Length: 439
Image (cartoon, rainbow, N blue to C red; front, side):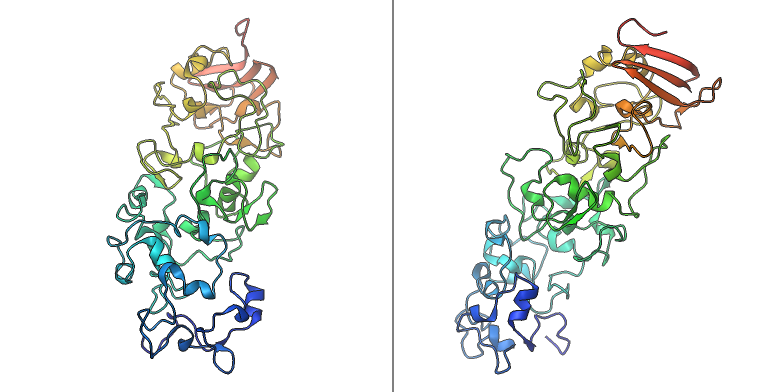
């Protein structure tokens, strides 16, 4: 142990009811079993947990710590009993962690708190974690050797939430709107409360793996426990000024997803509520205009991965499926695989929602040339020019040289005007109608 005890469980502090008043996950001192002794000043000492004259339970513990029995005499961790970690029978012998494989217990369930926490000589001093680097405390098991999920491979992919890139930035009490750009496992997962998904959750409800995680509501309020998946995403991709920039140059620029998905917008993908468009003929069977989707329906591990969740993807933008945004892209089921997960390809190519949909796509214009997939905020756009997710990519679509305008005008159901130039074709304007052709 040495003389520096900052990496050990604290001692010589008064264990008073004030601690449990401040943190309800610490039990009141009058609830301690009789074998847990405080000293004459009601301070916790080494002998509170250790009996130097009795080694019945190993390490001279006053009681067994099988499945965290000793820890739970003082700590009352909310949600722990039913969590996946509390009931995991995964064997720890192949963990990338010397402490864990030598505790005397052989499964995650039996190790309990010791699976992540180390009461003496801890690498992560503040919370007595095995390692100082936050992600290592997860990846020493989630590397395919203990847990079924191999997340190490996910974080080596082209795009992702690369937890290994950040050291010492995250803090459990950080203010989301001012936090430096970072991502750690515990930004999205609560290891003390995550449970297996029941399969009954419906978008946008949180699933078991993201249960009891803080979030930001659609109104921008910080909450201790998110009810909806998008509230977890909004912590970093909402009002936080350190959010990432868009890789596509848009006529209207906005990277605040809280604003992009706002229910008052002229158009948006239905992440918070059902979409603003009441007539979308291209939707696949099983979906309609009232359908709500998850952020992770689009942003997720790539489709070839056995691991699900927005950890890593071979596709740009952490997308689950291929979505080409380069000009001159040849249309194919794979090029816009992401879009075709919800929108029927045959419907699009048969022009069921827009008279010349197929002509545009077959002339190698990507979907993203005209459509901004998140949405257009009502402060920046309007229902005349930005319905149907219209927000042009200005590296592909240019102002009409005759009028100087770059805009779309909604004229009603399946009708509209375009003023622009694209692929050397002037629209000054060009009128589109689903029936009756174009002017």
